[in-house]
Amino acid sequence: MSFTELGLSPQILRALEEKGYTQPTPIQAAAIPIVMAGHDLLAAAQTGTGKTAGFALPILHRHIGLPKRLTPAPRVLVLTPTRELAAQVLDSFREYGRHAALKSASIFGGVGMGPQIDALRRGLDVLVATPGRLIDHMGQRNVDLSKVEVLVLDEADRMLDMGFMPALKRILVALPRQRQTLMFSATFSDPIKALAQQFLSSPKEVSVTPRNTVAETISHIVHPVPTDKKRQLLIDILAVDSRVQTLVFARTKHGANKLAEQLEKSGFRASAIHGNKSQNARTKALADFKSGKLTILVATDIAARGLDIPELPVVINFDLPMVAEDYVHRIGRTGRAGETGRAISLVTPDESGLLRDIQRLLKQEIQLITVAGYELSQPLRMDANAPRPVQGQRQGPRQGQGRPQQQRSGAAPGRGTSTGAKPTQGKRPAGSGHGHKPGLGDSANPAQRRRRHGGSTAGRANRPMGSREA
Image 1 (tube, rainbow, N blue to C red):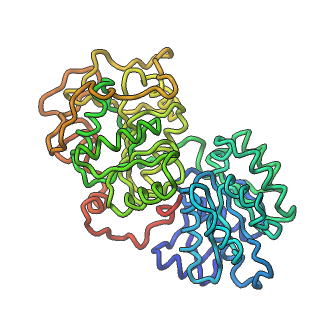
Image 2: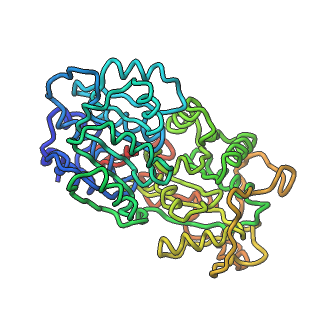
């Protein structure tokens, strides 16, 4: 199936052709006809599947050619859980609607309200917002939601997890009863179905991804490591090829800041992104990472959803998440739209229980590779009583503890062996490369290697959509 066969307007098809998109992803092929027909929709799709285009394209199609607005009130309202996702959804509407005379804007916290008020007063066709900031504008009577024809709840499960239910109910009261409502979620959990009953009317259901599944193109590797050597192992892995874009997840805001600072001192181009950063700082760090000015972005779970980083080759879990489902969302930043990706986790003995939870969730064993010089005195415990860190517990050595920081070099950190076994001279683990160092190995995909080193990418114009998906 092609986008032309879906019956989209010429203006949208032109924008898609300019982006090199020719074929819809499964969620787009399923959702677009339903939205174009005016039905409410409850859709389950993981990040990286192209779901933003699944609602943006048909919404733009239906609103092209409508009479001009008589009031500045928006016709379309899209609610997202995070600022980054709001910004990226807005970018998608603007990219796909570049040849349509539709006005759009986003409003979210962390920045001044003045420019947002100006945009609302000038009038909008599409408003993308986070619930909290939208409530602020509603309280100051800056926005009129009485003319909304389409409501989109993007990543609704995440909004529930973040406690936005009271805000969503307040927003619902301000909306017309007669409207089209689209809800996108990673799961069809009971809370999501309860939310759908409140917001949707006789919705069609679409599910293209089973719950908590990950892309088959992602390889999973675990490096067991003593707690006091974790930071140095990360440095050794990153030193294999500092040109490779890498998203590193830390458990706490303080830990993310500290880790980014230490990586910078070790010669890497790194920055941190988390909830305590100002919105301007978050926007700049993400823009620098996407442009290649930064090669390492250290993030808390605020970045596990909504970050659209096309063709990101590697995600590293410096700390495992406390909730196994968050592992799926974290590594969903790589291996998107059919690309290959690598998920590397550095696991200390006190995190072995978290690793066990992840393996049970994924229903598969994750390859354990011990790096020479970082052996544990005993193998990781994977039984029912495997230890777990206390929420908020600091990971890695405190200042002055453990192995001293070293300047980055091209030295190899060692070759891998099976967990608990003695290192074998000359034997490299599966999944390593670039000199057979741990983690950041040569991809089996030659095109991916060319992208890492600035080479050309043949056939890119015919790739499926989703790589630009939030």
